Amino acid sequence: MLSSEQAVRYRRNLLLPGFGEEGQKKLLDSGVLLVGAGGLGSPAALYLAAAGVGRIGILDGDRVDLSNLQRQVIHGTPDIGREKALSARESLISINPQLVVEAHSALLTKDNARELIAGYDIVLDCTDNFDARYIINEACLSLNRPFVYGGVLSYIGQTLVVMPGRGPCFRCLYRNKPDRDAPDCSIVGVLGTVPGVIGTLQACEAIKYLAGIGDLLVGRLLMYDALTATFTEVALKRDPRCPSCGNDRG
Ligand SMILES: [Zn+2]
Image (cartoon, rainbow, N blue to C red; front, side, top):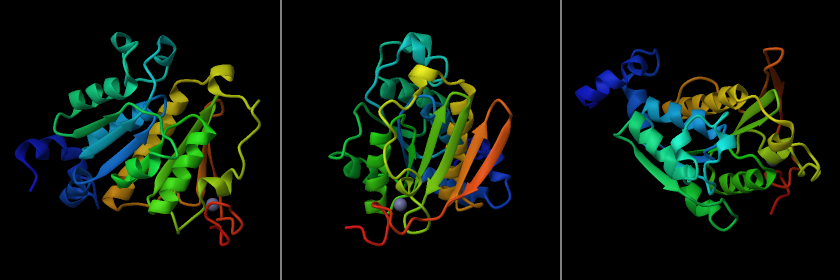
């Protein structure tokens, strides 16, 4: 049973067809790990907390910098210099004090990934580099955990749900790391609303998965171009020769 406070707080969720009290209870009983509390992780975390995901883990080893505030809306000017995981935790608790918010002020590595991810139902890849994405991909495949990839650059962004055993993985999409000279946001910039859109979509896919509603972005790469204000969907298939999820692995 939801408490009377919860019945009011989540009323707009409870009214939704197919969601209702059952969907809300599923969210309250779930755990989501956000890897990264930056441009993507900020909006994603805010919406997951507001929606009532009962346990939210935030993994980030960085501290808040003045140049982050243009897009990392979970942090404020007084947070400059603080650990991002702790700053983000404070914002989420302020939105929804009933939640358990676990701050992990650390970098994701091959050594800690499995142990961290195993404690949650789904992972949001809100990182900004290929090394971390490959680590998330391998750990989630081996633990049979879904994750929602998000990536942004300049005026464009994209997102994909990786569901082990059901669709392509991140390495089916990017077999190898791009050249070391590939552009990143610190060189070519990024419009702050682009990670806002993509991070919000990532949170939406996680909520749908946890509540058991709708069609997920499995095998469908959704791309967003802010300048033309267009969304494009590309169908992706699992690559049987993928080194991570292919038939010959291991
Ligand atoms: Zn694959």
